[in-house]
Image (cartoon, rainbow, N blue to C red; front, side, top):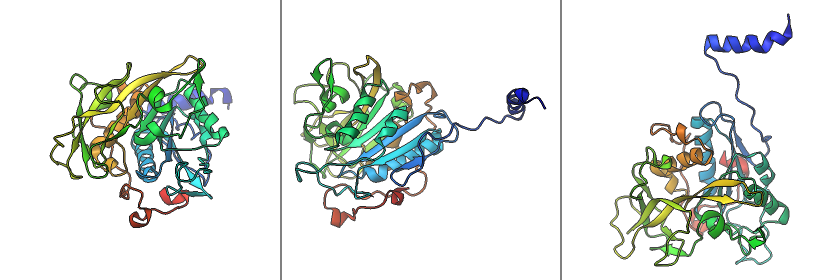
Length: 344
């Protein structure tokens, strides 16, 4: 048989049978230090998303694997989940620099950002060794998109060692468009109802998004009387609600503030990246279908796939999802260090 004709023959056979070729292999090797989920088919076919769970309060160690499974199973994205670890275990109880000055955190696998098409970041007060920070800084210069959740706007402690055109970059304010200035409402007591900004209802990230609610409170990211920086496009306004139940009454003392917006970031290579920041996103927030749909749609938008967003694409959890509650009382909440495999 003439083997040079084999690829053409296989292509013809695929057309006749309606079959498609196998998806490209997952770009990250399996390893006990991280989780990988292979996308099979869908609009995300061939795209690789790296999700980072590296905070101590909002149960990202549970929500990021859940979101990765949704993106891989329903949408075809290859996904890799990286975790902050200590002594080889995922450890949300590890202190930050404010509580333990010598602490150095560890997120194994950040080198795989070089193979990522999108970074979904959920970090808080990380103090990383220079080699790991270098992978993040390389990504920020790559022109590839960034999707940041909640505490990521104060995701790295102290002066972030990154400069563009000789000017020190503030990760929250400059890259993401705002950093945490305070809880706009009652911390761990209020909840949030988010609604579309007037005139933005047709934005692709809000396609098919109805009610958006979560038991986390609204963040203030700019001073009273101010606004988001120039270049930010607010999509959702979060109204603080009294109590942590859906349908609670609005907090009469608190006006709605932006909880989701888009912007761009340009690093040292002159390449411009899409940025989406969503200040909701606790583990319990992600039990809400509206929160999950915003997140999935945002992944599409970040990757320039907004024309593939449809209001009926599934955002259903794949398997059980019962996150532990938010907070730092780890013993009462049942939060303990676990191997990566416990989160698969």
